[in-house]
Image (cartoon, rainbow, N blue to C red; front, top):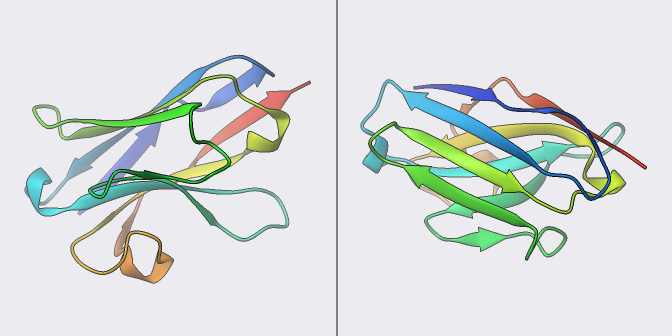
Amino acid sequence: VQLQASGGGMVQAGGSLRLSCTVSGRPFHTVATAWFRQAPGKEREFVASYRPFKYADSVQGRFTNSRDNALNTVYLQMNNLKVEDTAVYYCAARVGGSYLSLASYEFWGQGTQVTVSS
């Protein structure tokens, strides 16, 4: 399974970005997907998952996770971005396990940088 992420960039606080992640190599409906992020000097943390539909408290109400099954693509729409959202964002896919556990995710994209300036 390969995951190809894109859409990162630099934006001012309050702005928006949309990340995309295309999944290939396995039927899309057989994997659950999620987004994680890792800021400098910090551990990788959960952001949002699809199936189950969950968000981290820090992004609830600002980020929206969606999937286009026809395009085998997942999206993370990020609105009202804050400086603390600055991180490398990763899409990930799993077949089983828990949506919150990094160890459950067998497949990872390469990461895309999101930088939010004040």
